[in-house]
Length: 171
Image (cartoon, rainbow, N blue to C red; front, top):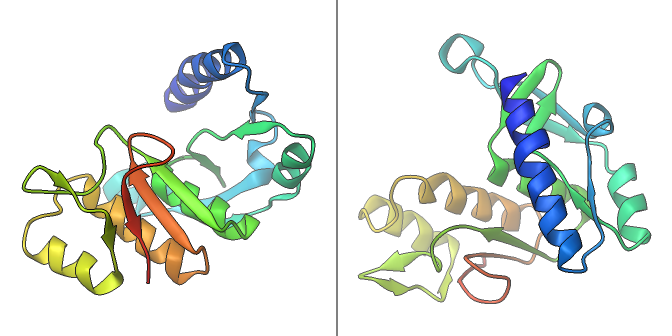
């Protein structure tokens, strides 16, 4: 329940307030979450209440989007209340909606090599960059999720710190 409090009551409310102040029609999903993100334990013995997305029931999202609202989804899944990696949840939502593009916002300008943003990576290059140590730490699951997203039919994923620039992951 502590993670739900942090993601919904603190981060979610603050984000919704900031977006609304900026003139965006944010709608924080709370009561609808248990019907939206269906999850299962990743490995309860090892990770506790950490889960992986099994299914997205997107009718609520489609309805909100058709009303011009911006749905805010905390990275929680339900079977029991489970913490979900936000990049993996974003992938599942993008795939379920048939999105053309997914933007994964992060605190860096994109995938960096020698301090420079790599403008584009294809699948073969992604694995090479991981194997050679160019991509490390938290960027590894982010970039792997991006590849899986494109493989599932989303045309491109952008990893960056804004809505327009960063590293484009393509086939």
